[in-house]
Amino acid sequence: MADRDKTKIPLGPAALTGNAAFAMNVGLLFLRLALGATFIYHGWLLTMGVHGFAEHLATMPAILPKIAWAYLAAYGQLIGGISVTLGLLARLGTLPLIVSMLVAIVTVHAPNGFDIRHGGYEYNINLIAIALMILLAGPGLISADAFLFRRGLWARGPQPLS
Image (cartoon, rainbow, N blue to C red; front, side):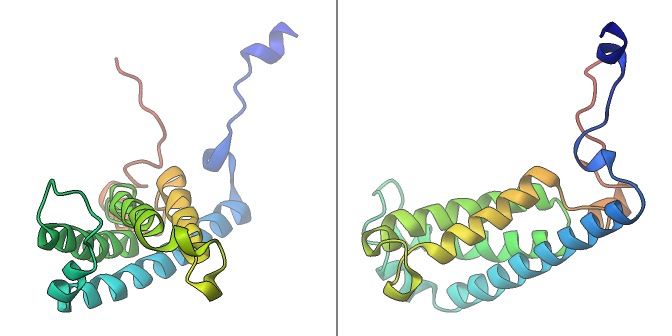
């Protein structure tokens, strides 16, 4: 039993080798491309009509003017989508995407229930789940991070403090 405690068994993405590692990295690439394209598209649309979008934000707290909330949402989705698509600081890029979807659920979709056919939050939950996957697993080895930081800035796992 003591021997088993001393043996370090790698867990998570670091434990994968060969075809499994390749499949995981290709899967992360497809998730990033789908999520990024979705948010680039919607972020671009919001930036083109940001003043009209601001009028729909009447329920936001008065900490900032409605137009400021509109710009935060629009450019958060656009820049976050680009970041996720390229895999460049993708974990950081998922944060505005998750926040904007949570705000959309609370302010728009929650009263309509879960079902997307009735304007519910079903789609938003799926986008949040994909963003959380990228946030937790990282962008994978087929990413700008992997190219710039030789295997990805976060793919190495937690680093010791000393």
